[in-house]
Amino acid sequence: MRTVNTLAITDRRFLLQGLEVMVRIGIYDAERLAPQRVIIDVELVLDADTAPQADDVNETLNYDLIRNTVMDIVGRGHFDLQETLARALFDQLAMLPDVTGLRVRTAKPDAYEDCETIAYQLSSFD
Image 1 (cartoon, rainbow, N blue to C red):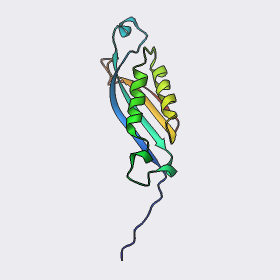
Image 2: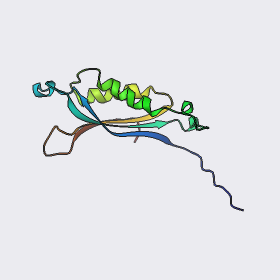
Image 3: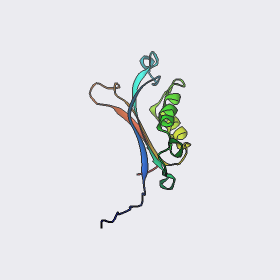
Image 4: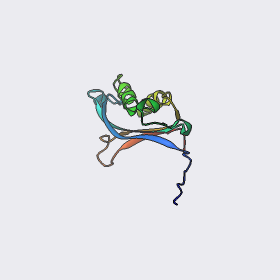
């Protein structure tokens, strides 16, 4: 007879990666003329004890809420700094249900011709 090894879940996360949005961001005159492309990554650590017990969306954090929260913030208006945008994202996402840790990264891929991106990251964990 085969036995089933049941491991305790100690970590669960949602990752939203590579969300490309147009954001009004920047301090320079040229940056204020039109929205810029920004790539956003979000990693949410969720309370392991609240994992869904059934195959029911009402028992989990619906990831539409994660994306919609990001989209709402980026559409609010102009941000001078990536730091300000990242902090606004961080603060709002931290208030979602069951979030116990969070990492937010914003990246401007078109800021310099000689590098892939210039990015800023905030994290509540290592």
